[in-house]
Image 1 (tube, rainbow, N blue to C red):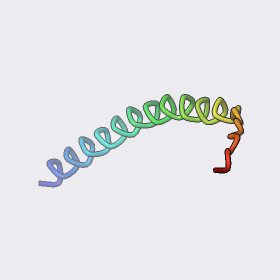
Image 2: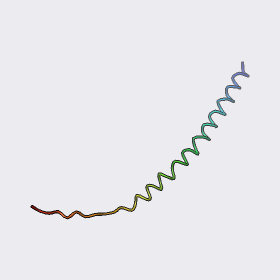
Image 3: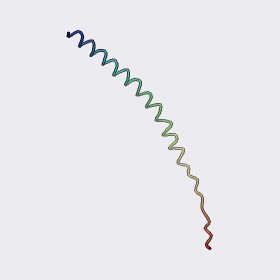
Image 4: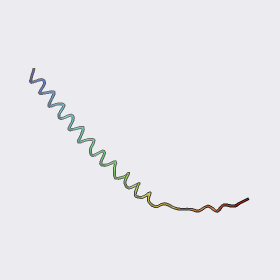
Length: 54
């Protein structure tokens, strides 16, 4: 049975690395739009309100 355990070890090893290699690019691709939207939100339009006292 050691061969079966080694086979499962190899399968698990490749599954983990394939999932890691899929997740990392997805995370890296999702980060720049967030940072770009944050940098574009730095331009704030300030408006004033004229209060009228009754």
